[in-house]
Length: 358
Image 1 (cartoon, rainbow, N blue to C red):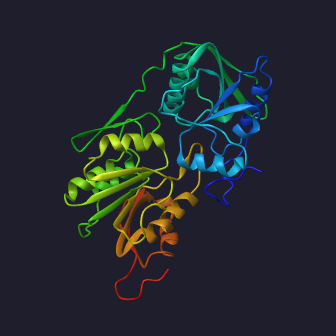
Image 2 (tube, rainbow, N blue to C red):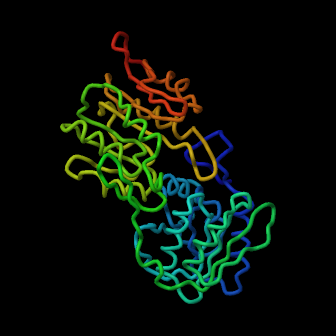
């Protein structure tokens, strides 16, 4: 049985859907099955682990790799890094078409760079998520782009005749903020402009003592961390993100002499009680699905990494009502600033007048 990871009781994160079934059936029906099948955007490993033979799992998220190992048991699947050149040609590939069409294009860029004249690709999606832009993007890389018939409200996008070499370069996007140009890979949230919640946070940063140590949790392209390093010239930063694309982007944008960026979905490698400040614009969108359990786990974990007088600063959509949860783990939770859409929470591990309790 395929398990969600990180664990959650919220059923919103779909483990297996009708589009996955179509992908598995398509792979099984190939008349000349390739020796190796590449699998992209398989969040929990359900597709990869249902395919026989040799499978190369192309990883985009650290939690995705952990989920695959958890669900694979004794079966070993080679992991391929999305940002490294593939050492072997890609003869066939399956993928869930992601919500981000920038990320979809990045996948096709990587496939095209390793394609052969006979490479075939199937992308699965639920029909309610179809947009004509999928065909437009696919047509940049494949000479033949077709759709399967719908089954159980799912379809396949079928690609052949790849334009070999079309994906030789991985493009970088740019975001302008506060007079600085930040570079980021496709698929990093948000594309084309600074995320509105992040902008609200930086415009309404709370008045707190200058921290010696800062952790930017779920750092994205690193804008928050970089802006705080400019605000606090004596601080040092640790930035983490679950996305390998975000980590690569943050490493481009953050000063290497004052920051360290980790590819991780937890803070387990950070010493307990070591941080003065943890800041986060936490994720709750996972493709077409929403889930706050990941954010809540980050809040709990952040508390353990803070010093006794440490502070967690969170920016979030108001409708998520994070304060109710934050008050379970933090002695003081205040709204430092809010408008009709966003709120900035300032959470203190201890209230300074009573013992710090867990």
